[in-house]
Image 1 (tube, helix red, strand yellow):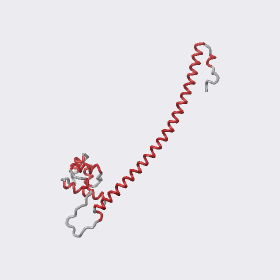
Image 2: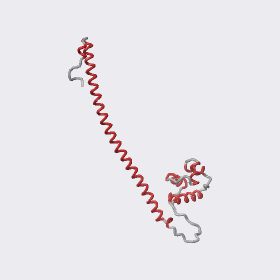
Image 3: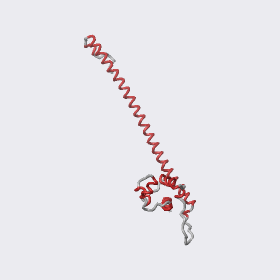
Image 4: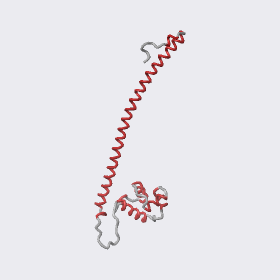
Length: 172
């Protein structure tokens, strides 16, 4: 039996203990502050029990989250049950393995995010170089326009077009 199956069976047991039948999706949805459809999907097993859902149920019912993973009690077993899947040690190992998988997945996502961040920084550095070069070009253009404006003013004030001719070395 997997952890998810154990959680599901304990969820159904706890629902029964708290007066929630298989057709009480609306009631469960109200407890979870969710839709009646979501409550119904949980009861039918079409939706998994996430950490938020378990937390909300624990608060509403005043129980510990371990209730969802405790080994099921069998009624009058005909033969001794020696299922290693239901021992606390096995459950603990399964939980640790699940946590390790989660940590590995999160670590992988962090590495991917770090790679993306490095790429963004490299792109920003390149963009900064382009902006600096563009600013330098704009400054040179402003100087040329200032020079042209100055010559036009000189020509207008003196009434002589020779002032509009380029001066040596001033225009790039």
